[in-house]
Image (cartoon, rainbow, N blue to C red; front, side, top):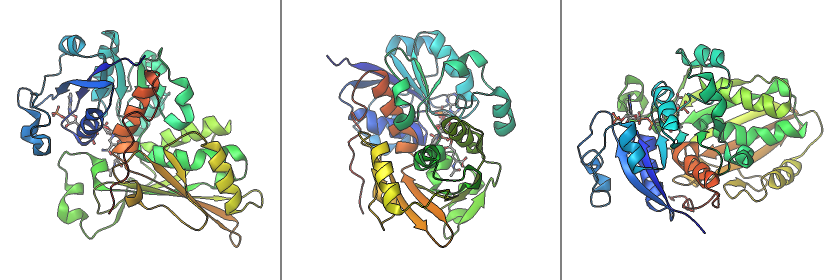
Length: 350
Ligand SMILES: NC(=O)C1=CN([C@@H]2O[C@H](COP(=O)(O)OP(=O)(O)OC[C@H]3O[C@@H](n4cnc5c(N)ncnc54)[C@H](OP(=O)(O)O)[C@@H]3O)[C@@H](O)[C@H]2O)C=CC1
Ligand SMILES: CC(=O)N[C@@H](CCC(=O)OP(=O)(O)O)C(=O)O
């Protein structure tokens, strides 16, 4: 029989948190029992988010572990890097299940975290406890005995779902991988910054954090695990003047004479039974709008016989499959429920 679970959201006033509210409100077995804010506790959440007017009447709770323990069974930490490293261990020690949306528990190596995030990593014991929740690849590691999920980054979700089957196939040269990644502005969160200011972003298209992006070690960690040998990539991120959406265009040199049909057939088999990965038919490539508001990752291919390269294009909605949607998918797996429960959103179109 299906159980119900009480959920709290820390960081509910951010883009990831408020999207969790939207998704969990329609989940059949989840009740949101606490929406939490470190800066505006006591105010109704609809004050800052009028789109929730009449839908959620609750006031924001403060960040208080004992209070959370009394109100919830599972906590989503949709909090900035550094904050999650502090708070998730306290929640786990209090006996709560935790799904963390930040990058604080994704890298197994504390040294790598310090190098890429420029801050001290969480304690090794908690890094060891966290299960990296790339649901379609590592979902079988998540079950009712798992208490702690580290939800993958938005770019790594799109990149890894696009590349892991190819890496495992042996059809591509592992030294040749290049990923050209683009994100909408909501990927930067709700906080104000010059870089996401309207007049800086509108009618503009820019590369950022070139060769320095914190998602590079996360992508390389998973690709290396899957390949069984160290893999490095060239990974470049770009900011696109749109609100939601990520497109990762990955290029690799073929080691074998494979066609688009070969890739499509192989990927369809690889993701068989995984409802949120959709493989596009030959000659069609996914666009961000075709997954907008949904938990889908759509993947399309092109093989260029002239250059002997494959191009793999993967798209997601960064706030859904790249954050809140995958977090709910992981909750479903943690609870032994169908992974798609409460996530059957058709993309919003146009
Ligand atoms: N946006 C995206 O597409 C994705 C985001 N992520 C990750 O998810 C996490 C949340 O991202 P996002 O929602 O975009 O970020 P936002 O900046 O939009 O929101 C973060 C929230 O964290 C809360 N917060 C800040 N400091 C503290 C603190 N000390 N204690 C408790 N809460 C705090 C803030 O709310 P308040 O002041 O009310 O407490 C804020 O609303 C980040 O780690 C991000 O990297 C991951 C994948 C995709
Ligand atoms: C557009 C934009 O700025 N995107 C953010 C994505 C960060 C993010 O989502 O956080 P995680 O590291 O927790 O995945 C960036 O590139 O840093």
